[in-house]
Each structure stands twice: as C-alpha cells, then as structure tokens.
Length: 157
Ligand code: HEC
Image (cartoon, rainbow, N blue to C red; front, side, top):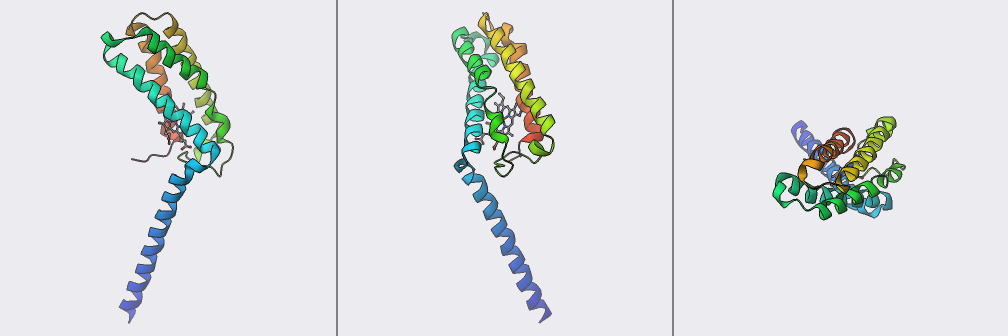
C-alpha cells in the first residue's frame, strides 16, 4: 500500500513539475505580448543584427565598407537609449533577471556605459577608412553587450 501511495505522490509531484515547466514556457513565448518586453527585445534583436554586419567586416577586414559600417554604428548609437524605459514594470520579466530590479543601479550603469561606447563607435566610424579605425571601439561595444548580459539577461543555454 505504502508503495502505491509513494508512486502516486511521485506521479503528482512529477505532473506539477511538468505543469510548472509548461507555464514557464508559456510565460516565455507569451512575452512578446507584453508591449514593454516586445519593444526592448525588438531593439536588442536589431542590435544583434547590426553587430553581426559590423562583426563580419571586422573578421574579414578586406570586406570593410565604410558607408555600411557608418550606417550600422549610427543606428546603434541612436537606438542605445531606447530599451531602458521598457524595464520599469518588474512583472514583465521576459528574459531579464531579477537583478535588473534588485540591482537597478548596476543595470543603469551598464545602460549608461552602453550609450557611451556606442557613441564612441559612431564617432570613430564617421571618419573610418579601414577596420583598424573602428576595431577598438567595436570591441568595447561587444564587451558592453556581454557584460550586461552576464548579470542581467537570463541564460537560456
Ligand atoms: C544594459 C544591459 C544590456 C546591454 C548593454 C545589452 N543588452 Fe541585450 N539584453 C539585455 C536584457 C536584460 C535582455 C533580456 C530582455 C527581455 O527578454 O526582456 C537582453 C536580450 C537580448 C537579446 C534577445 C532578444 C530577444 O528577442 O529575446 C539579444 C539578441 C540581445 N540582448 C543583444 C544585445 C546586443 C547585440 C547588445 C550590444 C550591442 C546588447 N544586447 C546590449 C540587456 C542588455
């Protein structure tokens, strides 16, 4: 009898766990429904695209196209201030970590630094004639993405 009982409670424990996992998944994929989460994720996605375009040139310096690089760098600098106001509502977590709210000063320091390094990359890009002219500033921007994600973006891998 005891064994049957154990099995049953294990089973219901298991289904509760599964249900929680399913709810967790729903919360993630439904995140796009929240306008704040959608707005900031859309920004981040387009930053990823811009970094990809510039990163390809950095990896293959003979493909450097000053006009395209400039365009991407100025897009990043212009959009760099946009996502942060979409992190006000703590209920709308998306893939942000608790730390966005519990360490709000740290998060805003990362956001400020990002605006600074993207402005510097944009400035460097305006007169750049080769990858060498933008590489250090590009590296700083990449480091800024990574540094913020380390603490403030939930790992999904
Ligand atoms: C100040 C912190 C911060 C900086 C700087 C930052 N990110 Fe993010 N990023 C986040 C957070 C927080 C999330 C999770 C947002 C969410 O799910 O609501 C995120 C999510 C993302 C995502 C996933 C978007 C999605 O659709 O779920 C991508 C891609 C991304 N960031 C790229 C970048 C790139 C590229 C840079 C640098 C050019 C960058 N981020 C800079 C904090 C930051």
